[in-house]
Image 1 (tube, rainbow, N blue to C red):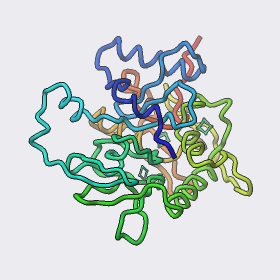
Image 2: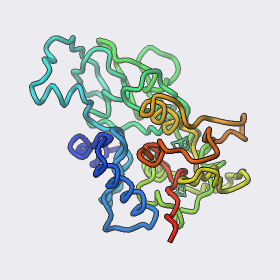
Image 3: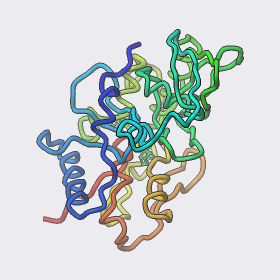
Image 4: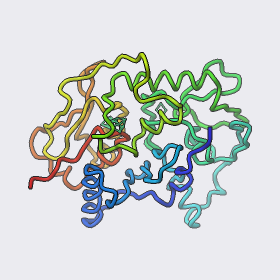
Length: 297
Ligand code: SF4
Ligand code: SF4
Ligand code: FES
């Protein structure tokens, strides 16, 4: 399978979280445009790591940024990458030279080798590794492993497209879809959704034959003054929780419940002044689970 076209342009399209009021207003305008499905709104760009491309393509539009801040700084001449050890590995018969310590998933994406992934957040420390989509086969390792949990090693030989890897990825996707309310026409993430992209890449329909679905109640949680939460669209990837904690220095949201009942929950029931200037959780959500409320008329 080919690497996504969108991935190759990610570096230039990635914006960091703007601190100024103009940037924040700009982002909020973007949320509203997504909700309305307006094609005249700004293209959605995730906070530092994800991109929703508007370009029609058979390849996934939801991708992790191909260029890390470290690499970009190196290109601008601000950083001497020569000080860092480079190692060589082979992925799908292609020799890659990457910085020692790089996460294997990032190394592949940076070199145009696409591996399905939803929960990975580049540079955010310990991987959450919940989506179970990013499996690869490492030579001399008996079972496929999630590439977001591995660091590159000198001489590593990796295959991303074996039948076992694809079977695991398809199982993981079917599991996500078995608790997902697929109603793309009424979802703000339509055409820029990680699930849609993954399903297309793996040649799996969003409503596979014979797959029983089990949905949660209520379908919408409207406790937050600015954000509506759709539990049956949520893939429990934790990107929102981790981003919120990083951005605000304290968690304003968390997981609540156990097992099938697990949902995202906001801590405060009342007004949350931090959220009005942030909304990073909406930006970082790979599906349409967090939606900016329509402003009062
Ligand atoms: S989150 Fe679900 S309903 Fe929304 S676009 Fe993606 S697959 Fe469709
Ligand atoms: S709300 Fe979105 S970002 Fe948060 S856990 Fe659910 S799918 Fe992931
Ligand atoms: S991206 Fe590796 S498990 Fe989700």
